[in-house]
Image: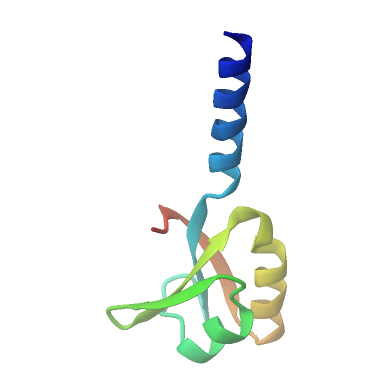
Length: 84
């Protein structure tokens, strides 16, 4: 029984670490992100949603994503919405 609980715990930890969130890199937090900014800074998947380009990013990569956006004169934000 201990082995099963350990395996389950490890799976839960692994899945929480793999969660990705929607990142935006724009002139302000209320504006849409451009494809060029997202492709330059996003370490994950870039996709278009309506007129906004979104970055699917793990929270652990946010610091480097934010630095890239700041270097391009933009503001980075990480939404609470998980990517699929």
